[in-house]
Length: 199
Image (cartoon, rainbow, N blue to C red; front, side):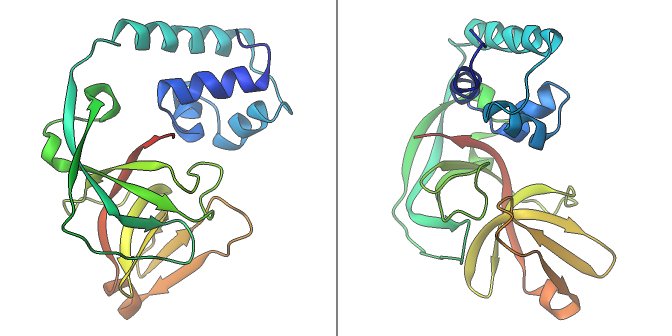
């Protein structure tokens, strides 16, 4: 079942997890998980058994409650140079409650489409991303957020120091950006990316 790298990727996608999320569940780093899916590293027997257990749990919860979550087909969250398309066009998508970490209310989540390749391989252009709306909680360093800056939407990893905000892409071809003082004040965090729906 897990003999080939593509088998592990297929299982991860079926579970609806990003490489980072699966790595966390298996107590691995995201880069290591990436190497496993590229065939450059292998999972230990212990990790394979843990992955099998995740699959069993997912199958057991496959009849889990589905929820209606707002989907904005005309709002594109940029994983690249930025794009911001405002729209009143709203639909609903049914997704499993198990895909909403810390679920409390479906109204606290929404779905939009990622564009660009700066978060590749974690988020690919065209993936649907699940956003948990930001409620002024503290930024968790290195988590992925959707935010508005200079009237454009971005999806990036954020880390915060005393007087600076560090913006990082997963694609090493993109440079890290550091915002300070007044620039930081122009950033409006919309939400945290808590899931990716692969097309």
